[in-house]
Length: 406
Image (cartoon, one colour):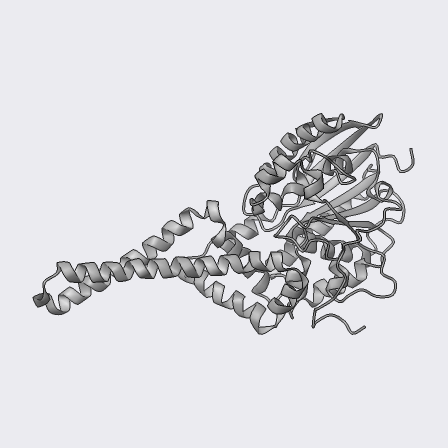
């Protein structure tokens, strides 16, 4: 079989996620079993042995072949967790700064012309946090009014102090309660996510740059090992981190010309949220560089049903970085409305956060995108999609004022 894979190394780079990496192992275990039952192949997931990072081993048996894959999560959840460890006042200051970063640069309006879905998702935490603040202030005003009825008029200044103290206690208590129940509505979480991107106007924080360099070194070591394919998977904001990491590896001539082959799968990417900001010079340069390279195969998969991603937006082209030699990425649709059964689509349609992770899950009616065939099957990413035409519905129009001149 052309491009047959016996052994594969998979590096999974998650998005802005404070949860420990074991959740991805459990997701892979349960969803691979579900997909195997639907598609008629076998996938066995076992604990990792002899692996330095956090990951798991996969034995795939499909298309008459047996394939061994070692999956490893590139962990930066500790950085995410620290960035979210802010008080209530600091979070609202962060809200103002983030809103200004996108409004002041004009990025918000340009991104709205590109895709409205992810911009509605971006405005959602701002609107909800403002609403929560108004509710808290309203309840504080109610306490002020109620204590005014209870206290007699002759309490004077002491009464005023007591009324004010009551109101000032209620406001932070209400906001703290909203924060505790955010695991249902994700407003505070999403606010921290967008603020993390906007804090340096699209540039990576120094701590994250250092971690990305470590990831690059770690990936580079795998090229000297006995793998047929090294596959890097970047999900959500992990996609644009992977773009820069891989660009650095190729620039530094650390990617071999032949074996193992390098594949890059970007899923549910939000690249324009970064590349449209004025400080994202590094990412824009990396997009232009990676798009013309022959040392990798880059496939970008999104779906219009995912309201959190820039669905079918070619991340290079819409960022204004497409040049005459552009060859990547191959933009494909996971087409949730066709690959999920009508019953399942109805169940998931309004669960936006869950749909953003559907790329890592089983499909009832799988098309040519199957995460488990890609990560545990006998074909390289290059051979699996060789000759495949890009989605006809892809978007390539650039509204980025910081893109290079044509």
